Length: 88
Picture 1: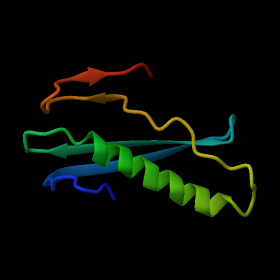
Picture 2: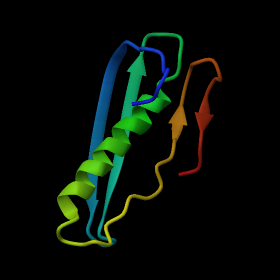
Picture 3: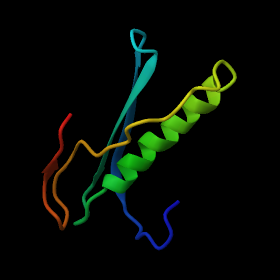
Picture 4: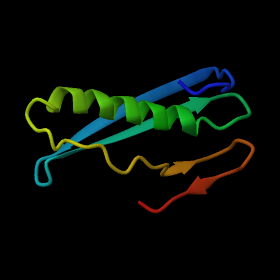
């Protein structure tokens, strides 16, 4: 999906989805892990984005106003750039 991106050996990828009826939204979170010496945040962001595209595809017939918002990195640890914890 991302040209010239290096291969990673993933040890875990998980995706969770939570329906939020009060706001008519779906919250999608993912976790990716590797034993390698690099970060896997792009893999986690890709997992969330592909899940969001799947939800969009299923909902577009019901509403043309369906949209994907706020794909963000919440936290990461390890890798060359070290740890990161963003605002929730």
